[in-house]
Length: 348
Image (cartoon, rainbow, N blue to C red; front, side, top):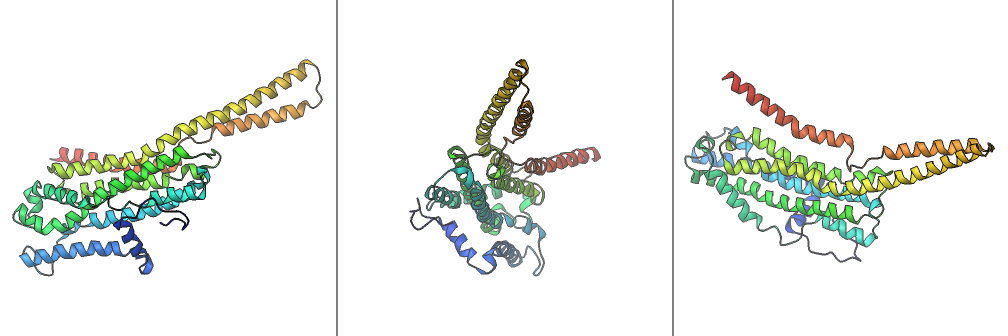
């Protein structure tokens, strides 16, 4: 994301943003890079298993595939969410009340990670990788190696890639959601009758939330062998689900209060006018001056209809179907998981 040439950027873009720029210049927008990264991870694991004799040459270890997508998926998610943020902030523009220069800077901040902030992700990813593999059950690492140290050599590169991406997306998520809350606070042209800008950032927050929840549920199912009895992996799993729910709700909570206040003001203004028409109607009836009384009753009916319309205006910054969809995506897998565990316990 660039800003006008007349406006100086507040900071240089990170290596990740420069990578995204290079990917977007590739044929077909470069989105094929991410599945290619996923395939490269699988090829590395399979080749290692063939070389060490853990798997017959030419065979495919399905278990090796389950832990491979995290890095490519997370890198893709950072890129995708940056594009979603760009669309969301564009949709919010009418409500911002900002000048072109102010808005361009906010847009740049929302879509661009500052340079020099993400290198810590590599040692963090390496530490989490070591913990998750060293504390993994013996049955989980048996298909890859005989000891945890050997498993580090086999699984380490793809695991470091995956776990290193998590601090980056977590950092960018916090940045983006704080900036969303800031844009909501700074907005000076909110209009309850124009729901497009009001709902704009729910497009971003729901996708961020679902992205984290999807990782949690994938880990719980496709990669379950590393989760059971593994405190490091389980903590990461639980954190991703809770973070996903928080990402959807918390950054939009602040604007809800502003919308409630705005709606109360509109209802009050309509009620004052309804009362004024009511007083005028009584005055004319008491004075037996019925000329033009139909105009008064028509005006009162329109004002009452307007007040009812205002009463139906939304004060939550997301469409009802988005909230229902998000809750279903979060709660349905939990319900299925609990039911299957309960049934499994009864069948034993």
